[in-house]
Amino acid sequence: MNNSIENVSLKGEKVLLRVDFNVPLNAEFQITDDSRMRAAIPTIQKILRDGGSVIIMSHLGRPKEGPEDKFSLKHIVNHLSDLLQTPVDFANDSIGDQAVEKASALQAGQVLLLENLRFYKEETKGDRAFTEKLAKLGTFYMNDAFGTAHRAHASTAIIAEFFPGKKAFGYVMAQEVENAIKVMANPDRPFTAIVGGAKVSDKILIVENLLNIANNIIIGGGMAYTFFKALGGTIGNSLCEDERLDTCLEILQKAKEKGVNIYLPLDSTIADKFAPDASTNNSASNEIPSGWMGLDIGQQAASDFKEVVLKSKTILWNGPMGVFEMEAFENGTKTIAEAVAEATNKGAFSLIGGGDSAAAVYKFGVENQVSYVSTGGGALLEYFEGKELPGIAAINA
Image (tube, rainbow, N blue to C red; front, side):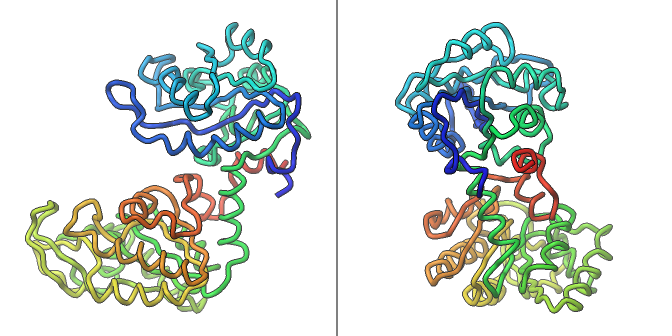
């Protein structure tokens, strides 16, 4: 990848680095999960090693009306200093006098963190005047915030226009893009996509796009029951989107025409209520009795899906097989997690697509046994839907 941090020298540059430090904070403003911060450390360290300085830009939360203390990035300064093992200076604004003064005084090897970009509405609107002020703080632009790559915001896309020939992806962005391309553009076959989650409507664009690329599509989670109802089955009180029944039939028809295998869970673990202490049973997924709901794929389905996964050379997993947060309904997701790890061990390439799937591989302890766990969330979904991401297009332009 030509526009990667690997291929540029940053000596003497003041690098305006867009990261995704949108980390969860508790009531005492302590960071409860710093994985997004840790992911950006290699990029920052490479810039400093090259002899550059770093001006870090990020958002935090969703402030409504200007600055709010609970969304201030000052809460993460000490932890960032610890991770980098170097002092981090903080500007109490992102384009104001203090930001300008501190940025202009920055020396090689130093790090400055700007205040939350979203304290300005102009950031999300992609306002050019605001962007120009940001751009003047640095001499080189780098984007390492894949999680916001699908947004055409000031700091994620518009700003790149001000740095012709002096812009690049950081390590996180470069890896995310590289791995996503590996799956979507040139997968080793058979390529199996595992799609789960609650709603067909959330995943419909991905499934439609995957029909052009995948050999096998495994469908689990709550969305499976809309398919079963569309096929004339009874699904009790299971999740269902009645307005998507025709869509499900269209997907199955298109898959048939294209020679893509669609696997639905033949059986389900059913419950009499949505609760950890519910009474449970096993049922054919298209014969769920009234008053019961499917909350996980069943033993037979887990075994069938595992068999498909183990024969695969490329695996994309996005979405759980059931309510894996509750122990009674974790077996399906756990089986998939372990099967993906086993297939990877045998030489398959596996990409775990953010969100609940990432949470599942961590919960079941296989995060180091898969090829890549994306931090992308919404950005990755839009990429797999076949959309162009503004944050990627801006660097490649």
